[in-house]
Length: 210
Image 1 (cartoon, helix red, strand yellow):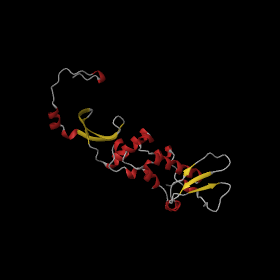
Image 2 (image 1 turned 45 degrees about the vertical axis):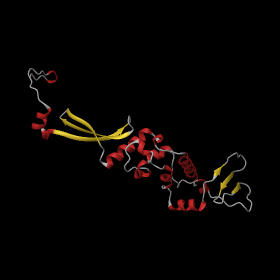
Image 3 (image 1 turned 180 degrees about the vertical axis):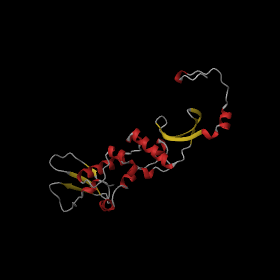
Image 4 (image 1 turned 90 degrees about the horizontal axis):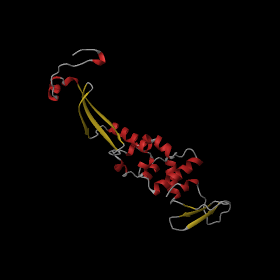
């Protein structure tokens, strides 16, 4: 071999098998497992690699085992894919809209805007991701229950007191009118300007719950 830096030439060489490399240079073989989000399969994947210097001896997909690495990769994948990868239903979207309405009126209520939800995944979603590794498994999540779990005890108590979800009607320019279904399937009409004896007062929290 003539050593001339980047222009070095090899004039004579002998064949070395992988078995011989593993036998005589076992201590120098580096084994690593990298875990990350695969956008193609929309899943968390782990790749096991064996390298001798810059020479890759073996690469293979293995089952992700490290819980923290899997969770980190899954949260990264959810952020990359965006809110659409989560199993939103009509009911959970309605609940999110009501909570966001309450947040605008009273900032102590949780901020559930899409951007904020993506920013705070570790806080509100991560505790429910045990055993989940791909987009299909994410469909098991019940986002409505998870969002309600963010509420404080006081808000939960308010939800129990206020009862069923109200039906909103907004044809209003002059007066705010709400039709509120009750447990007895009767309806009370609340007019912003005038209330009758049969009408009961309405808390702002009533717009949030079923």
